[in-house]
Amino acid sequence: MIKVGIIGSTGYAGGELARLLLQRDDIEIKWYGSRSYTGQKYASLYPNMYKIVDEECMDDNMKELAGQVDVVFTATPQGLCASLVDEEILSMVKVIDLSADFRIKDVSVYEEWYKLTHAAPQFIGEAVYGLPEVNRDKVKTARLIANPGCFPTCSFLSVYPLVKEGLVDPGTIIIDAKSGTSGAGRGAKMDSLYCEVNENIKAYGVGTHRHTPEIEEQLSYAAGRPVTISFTPHLVPMNRGILVTAYGSLTKEVTYEEVKAVYDKYYEDEYFVRVLEKDVVPQTRWVEGSNFADVNFKIDPRTRRIVMMGAIDNMVKGAAGQAIQNMNLMFGLPENTGLKQIPVFP
Image (cartoon, rainbow, N blue to C red; front, side):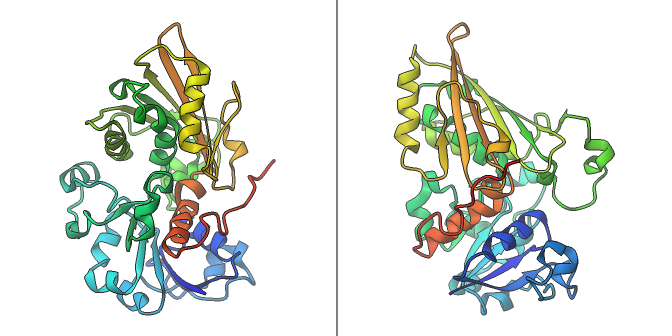
């Protein structure tokens, strides 16, 4: 039995962690943490948990929590995990952070984009970027995981094989991404109100979105040199899902079969990454509620560019599901344990 604590359990990502973990017989959730709702019944905040979870919300005392569980998930705003974690805690318990606190290796880049002073830069070097499809072996032995962002997960999985193999010039990559409103979190914000979102689509964070340096850093590792991209996210009126359409210039003429072979080289044995059949485009509806990432591509010989596409559920593969995927690896379990949910339709 793996004992689990969730700090930030009342946000969307924390609620999804609880939903997925509660379906497992090998997991016991010992701590439903919430700074805003301490002392309130968890099921009063998530009525889908009525008669499933009887516990009240606890505070965010990670030091007390660390002595009671095997792994702590922090599904919290940026800056909180870094302010709580220390060497004593990491010597007692594994930590999987769903915020951006330990994703970016250059602390100055983090502080520039997130407008925060990093509270625990001494742990950035050891934190493992928790994208199992790339860092699986490192995840297995880690005590601190930086769970990737939702946009970076979908973006990276869509373009990684071609950047790694040098078939696309990484300096020409433009990423256009669409996200459902759950990506904005559960807090009350005017831009997330029904009347603001419904029957509307808009770009946001143009040229300034905080996931940009995370995507660039990971693509730089793949390319073996610094990479700068253009990244523009859009908000669309749906609950869940991310769709990425990325464009890049080819470095040589290629055939469909050559590009497909590259994607298969990296993903053929990956349970959660599905390379679709020729001319089938990824759609968010076919991954909803699951930990799958659907990817595909289309060669545009007229412009000598290639279109790379991907779709994920931002709450599962983009957050809670990937965190559990990392937890499974850290505890020596099959990677897909508790994550075999078939996408929901309709």
